[in-house]
Image 1 (cartoon, helix red, strand yellow):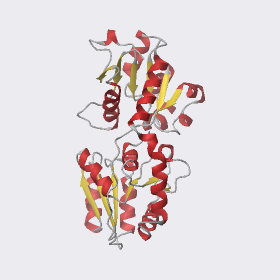
Image 2: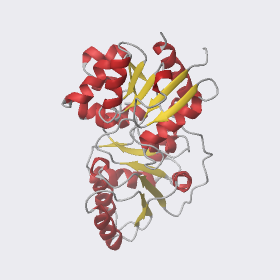
Image 3: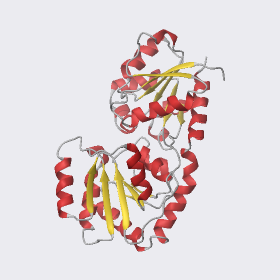
Image 4: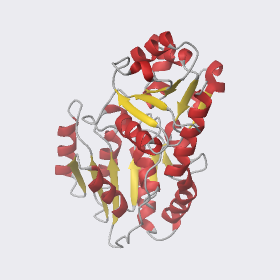
Length: 323
């Protein structure tokens, strides 16, 4: 493919360090050898006249840039990348998000069930591009206890209360230890996490941590827990899978689209009792049983989340968008 210039619009830049920013930065890095990629929060800007292709992250939050592109370049060069809140909330009632769907020549979803969430009329122009991360070597795990980690800011959509409730149900199990990584950015979640920590000696709320340390924590864990109410395609799931760490996840489409319909590590969203039971099963046979089955299933999914696979998907997307 000829070297081309493109702009990625992201509602969050480096200061936010959230999923949108990580996706935008990674895509820029994956394409940098063959294409000229710039990242912006708002479009148009002084360099807008040289942009033949736009990739816009988030149908609602990037709606002004998407509308401006559609007016300047009607019917060409625009792909909209859909987040979890786009797919499972905004596109069903928000006029701005709905207009973004109509304006795009391609829609990108980040897990294989995302297309099913779209209105039927838009599914033909949707593409799945799994996100990627580098592989980490699995590290030896202790036999003395089950080390569990959950990673995600404490906010309602991530359902942190499910983990806290499961920790209380397992308070009598000194051999099941739970670490909770993430900032409390809404409501009284910090108070709830501190109260759980005070009452349950095996639960620790570690607050926000640098990405490198978080990945090390995922590597060291026997299992990662992901309790979200909705997801577009969770970074932390692919990071666990690519680190050899199995996942216990809420049975919501965004997680099933990452791990597969036949995955054995699901619990119903919000069901702390089911999560606690799964953790006890994982502890029962730390080198076999459920934990070994989950590990094998994650190994089979790992090739989906390689940088090579993600770059190939991006290059095909750009080819589709070229005039």
